[in-house]
Amino acid sequence: MSGDRSTVLHPTTREDLPDDAALLKEMLWSALQSNDQLAQSNDELSQKVSWLQRMLFGKKSEKLVSPDQLALFEEAKKRLGLDRSDEEPPPRLPKGKAKTRRGGKRDKKRGKFLGGTVPKNTPVETTRVELAGETCPECGDTLTKLGEDSRKRVAWVPGHFVIRLTVVETGFCPKHPAESLFTPEGPDFIVPGGVLDNGLLNKVVVDKFADGLPLNRQAKRFARKGVHLPTSTLSRNVIAHAAVGQHLVDAMHAELLASPWLQGDATSLPILVGDRGEAHPGQLWVYSNGETAVFQVSMTKHGVYPKEFLTGFEGVWLADGASNYNEVERLPGVERGGCWAHGRRYLFDARKDHVAVMEGLSLVRDLFLDERQAMLLDLDARREHRRRAAVPLLERLKTWVEEHRRCDHVVRRPKSPFAKALTYLTNQWTALVRFVESPEIPIHNNRSELLLRTPVMGRKAWLFAGSPMGADAAAIQFSLVTSCMLQGIDPSTYLDDVMPSLGRKTPSEVAELTPSKWARRRREQAATAD
Image 1 (cartoon, rainbow, N blue to C red):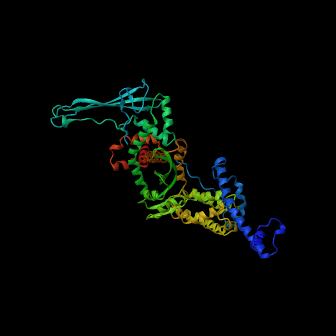
Image 2 (tube, rainbow, N blue to C red):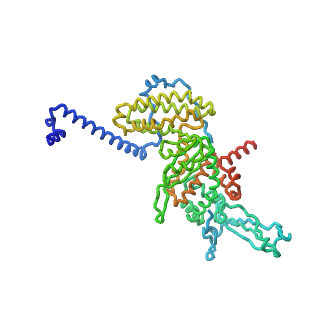
Image 3 (cartoon, one colour):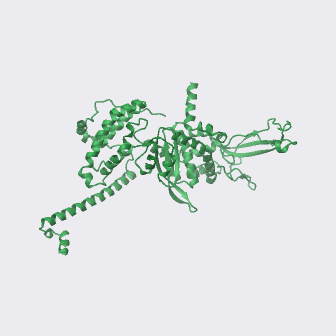
């Protein structure tokens, strides 16, 4: 009987179908289950193919292709009270504006820098620091010149290179040579033993970390001017520059921890490790309060890294729904806010999976339109506006999610794009509605993604960090450069003004030189001058 039953359950012709109704029901149910499994598998493959096609050949924007796509739900919008065609459009937001070991030493055979060479006809600018009548602390006699300490550095003047020669005299008293040895202070240099002048070193840093120009391309560009500065020399000086900038980043980190809210995101950063230089999948994190951005590098994307960085922070942590940030949510005094841009993205990806998705997209669209007006208000007025305008939309959206989670399409196809979108909204709902009672945060985390855009675009050119030390230096440089751009100031101007004398500053003085405070003083000085 078992053999006959097996044969009947897999008929090849119509005549093979059994006459037993119970057996026919069992065959039909088995076919339906198999069809559901095939549909789920087809959903997953279709999502991957559709996403790859859009990433390779389609538009990256998540705007709807045509406004007419929402026309199907005009009647539903009127029924739900969402039709706002008679209202005035909300106003738009106003658009704001380690020391090197070999660098600088000289090769006696060639008479050239070990760290680089320059053409023979390169102009030389000499700065002398002489003994200005200094006296012996023991007898009061004027010090006698003992010798000179000279150092040549390559500098960039718009249009050409120059050599800046710094000569510092040393004096002593013949009567008390041990007690009277004296060298006056010379100019401040970011890397005292380097071959790059302050301006040229800052230019190298900004060109790479703001404009994505790799060091090897910069070396080629210098070579066209006849200046040979190998990539290794540039790399050592950039790392030494970052070692000095670490003091500023520590002060910026303290600023972030004192903020009432923070947002963050992460992206991959390949890091070469080991003697063979194998690429390791590192992670680049960013944390920001809208005025300052601090980057962090880790070898993995484990949630312990943002937890350690944010220890001591109390407020709202705004991020996407990634599990990396679950540890942050468990910190005392931290509440988690959600990102509606990510929620909308799931709905956007499911727009072709189910016709009802367009209704959800229209509700989220109205939520963003209301937020444009809310962000123009102060915190108290913004909270009241969100309670009045956003809460009703959220209630309708919550009802819409709950209704469609019970529909047959979602129940039978739990891995479909529509089902994933509804699951994301349900799981993140508490975090997504946090903005109503936290007026200081926006309803999305788009700024964090924009902050990562500079490293991501630069990564297409320089591909990877050459070492874990280089990755840490990159995080420091990205923090300084990106924070300057958040303040609307030129990173080169800021670095030229702050970095040379940073080594002589106390921690309290360094805390006043962060990009946000430096930019605030500049704006106050400009307002006073006017």
